[in-house]
Image 1 (spheres, rainbow, N blue to C red):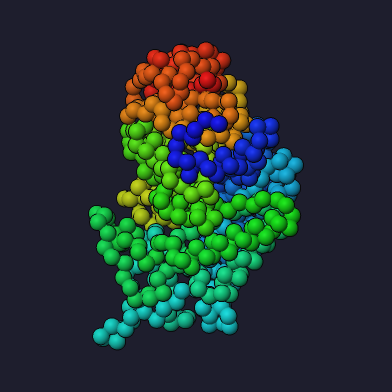
Image 2 (image 1 turned 180 degrees about the vertical axis):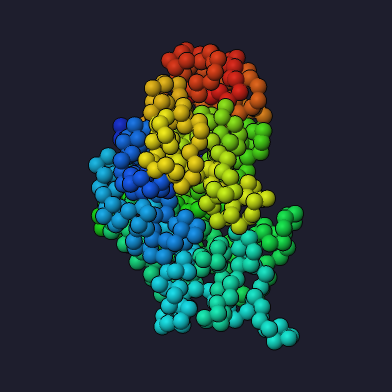
Length: 573
C-alpha cells in the first residue's frame, strides 16, 4: 500500500474501512457514497395548477434523478404551516400542509422513491414552531405541561415601573428577538420571526416530543434528516445577559450588530441532544438493518466540525458557500478544502455544499463560466456532495420586483433594501421545458416568476446536448461509481496556483488527476511531477468549455497542460 500523502489520522478511517483485503469489496455507509439533491418543494413541480410545487409534482419528476444518477433527495419543509417563513414555521410536525398535498401523498412519494432505489431525507425544524402550533397556544394559557414549552421571560422592570425586554438579543431577521404576549403577560423569545417561537429544550417534555417526531417520520420510511438551525437550540439560561457589540458596521437592528455569544453556539446540552437523536436513528437501524443519516445545518469552521464529529455529528461544510472571495482564488479555495483532510478524527466525514435556498446561485455569484467547474469539484472531492435544485442546469438568480417579493425577510427589509436581503431570487421555479412557465405549472402565474432564460436553460433542451450543463453534471455524478472516487483517498499536494487547483483521487491501483482553472485567464502548468509521477493520461470527463482542445478519451500530456478559465479535466493516470 502506498504511503498516505496527507495526515495519517485523516487517512485512517477510509483506509481501515476499505482495505480489509485486496479482493474484498469495500463497504461504506450509503451516505458516504451518495449524492444529495436538495428539493425546495414550492419550486420543483406543480401537479394541480395552483402555481406552487407539491409532493405529487415531485413524484412526477422522480425519473429525473434516475437520469442524473443521483440517489438521495433532501426535501425542504412540507409540514403543516401558516407559511410565514415558507414551512420553517411548523404548526403540526406530523402532517403535510395542504398546499403540498396529504400524508397519503407523502407515503406515495416514499413508495415511488423506493421503486427507483432513491433515498429520502427530510428537513427537521426543531428550534422553533409556529405561534399557531397547538403547543404554543396552550403555553399562552399556562396550560399544564405546555406552560414552559417555550422560552418565556418577565423582562426587566424599569425605575418608572414599566416593563422592558429582558436583554438586547436580536432576531436573525432583524429587530428584537423578544415579543410581548398580552395574553400571558410575558415576553417570548424567537431567534427568527415573531411567528416562530423558540422551544425550550431544557424542558424534558419538549425533548420527548421532538424525539417522537423523529420516530414518526422514520416509521413513514424516511432515510434520515437534515436538522435545521442546530446552533440555536439552546440559549444562555440567564436571559438578563446582553450580547456584546460586534465589529460589523451594520444597522443596530440587524442580527450582525451583536456577537451572539448567548444565542448561537453549541452548549454541552446541544451535544447531548444530538447524541440522543443519533442513538435514536442507530436503534432503529439495529431493528431493521437500514442505515439512517442525520446531517446538521451549522455555519461554522473546520475545527468546530471536527469537534462535533468526535461525538458522531455530521454538520454541513458551508465554507464554499460563505467564504469564497470574488474573483475566485483557487489558492484560497484549496486552503478551505485542505482543512477537511487535515488533523481530523477518524469519525470525520466531509459534507460539501456550494449552494442552498438561502444563498445566491453559483452562476450568479461567480459567473456562468464556472458552473461546470463547481459541479465537477463537488463530485470529485472526497466526501458527500449536496446539490441545490437547478444547479445541474446552471440556473441563475432572477430579478423579482418588490411588489412580487414573497420572502418575509425581504419584505421586512423594505423596497430600498430588499434586493440585498431577499432569498426569492434563488428560489424560482425549476425549469423543465421551453414552454410557458418552464413546464413547472399550468397556472397563469406561478408563486415566483420563472426565469426568462427557461427557453434554452431547461431539462428537456439540455438533455439533447451532450455538452450541456445537465449532461456534464450527469457525467460528474457517474465519476462517483469509479472506485477511486467512491472508496478512495485524496492527495491535495498537487499543483495549486491563484488560478488552478488540482488533486489526486486514488484507490489501490486506480489513480485520477483532477485539475480545474477557477481563474480569469488560461493557465499552463506541469502536472507530471510528484505526487502525480506520470507524463500522460486519458481524459475521462471535462467541463466542455468553449473552444476547449480537450476531449473525452483523449490521451493528454501532463507536462504542459493548458486549461482555459472555467475549464476542468479528470485524467486517468
